Length: 507
Figure 1 (spheres, rainbow, N blue to C red):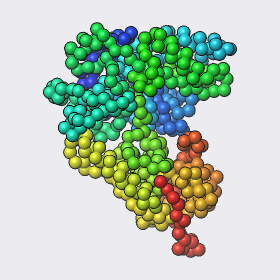
Figure 2 (cartoon, helix red, strand yellow; figure 1 turned 90 degrees about the vertical axis):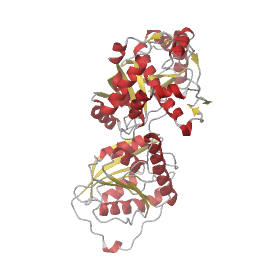
Figure 3 (cartoon, rainbow, N blue to C red; figure 1 turned 90 degrees about the horizontal axis):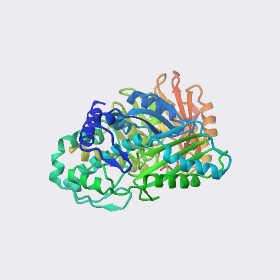
């Protein structure tokens, strides 16, 4: 990740050397202090894949990682110069910097006393370092927005940060003066070789990270009031208060402490109050939109999150030159994520529904266009192909596939549970035919666990279940099964010759 490191250092040089502006009540420290700043980052991840996300953090950041008791969250410590790499993680949905964590918070007996404690808590928290991280994170958006503006094709467009359309009025000549440093930052956030998507947090109305010195001095004298909101996420049955009550009273205290303006929709800063039983974590959001929205532009009714697709692919440990197939690809979330992260493998996206195949092809085309815009040149392409086929009669040679990863129909939005009783056994049989004996593996997601267990029991001589990950898909309790292909060769039973798979509707 040398490109990321270089880009981050350039970012610090550009922003931390210019001036040490205050975030209203919090002053930025000296450059040396900021460069060596250590903070705790929290991340939300697909439930069930907390360990996968923790492994990715250790692998890519070299940081130890703690899995929260509250499912779907992990915590890890980083220095400020690793903030860019955090945005490169493929398994995390949202990021926040931890202000303070209380592992055993002592709640009072009555609601009035608890809410009073929340009011008093706001003024006791160590806000300074987390706000510095929030400020630096905001600079990422500033730099990225300016480069988009300097693009001749987008110079007349408006930029929408979720706060209404605002026309960016920047002098192109001044943009060019920073082209060297900006291009290095661009390597971090817009080079597909690093494979990251940086979600944005802040729109207009910030008093920090301005290029023009005269604007800095003017805003120091007359700083603009930041807008904020408090979001409370609460889990547990022993609390005598509601999430709205906690957010209301804690938010009122934050407003009094910082003199910020409360705004539930057009906010600049989002303060998080996460409560799980007796564990309380206060944080500041670093992402405005989930990082899983990085590849898909054409959605179907059951489009899989890119972060979940990454977790499923990582379970089967792809190796260079592996052939990876998604026989029920839908909009192509799994093979597109695979082709982006494991570009040394070959990925095939197939589906029986022509609409799904078209959506997958359009998503691939959109991603290639995005790469072309960022790199300024025609990309070489992605190691991926799309095809329409019958899942139970795949046009693939026997034993030619190394990995199969797919999201099987639950029988809810797509297909039906009744048809799954015929579909699942036929799918597993055809997958066992094309998958390489002895070394092949499959990662299959389904909520119809009873039907899958029955189908798998009849394929015990061809598939061995290695691991099961329990996940939450839109409120549905689903499972991801990691299967290993046994060394036994596939022999098609004579009585099943000519049998074809019933068509099912997919996205």
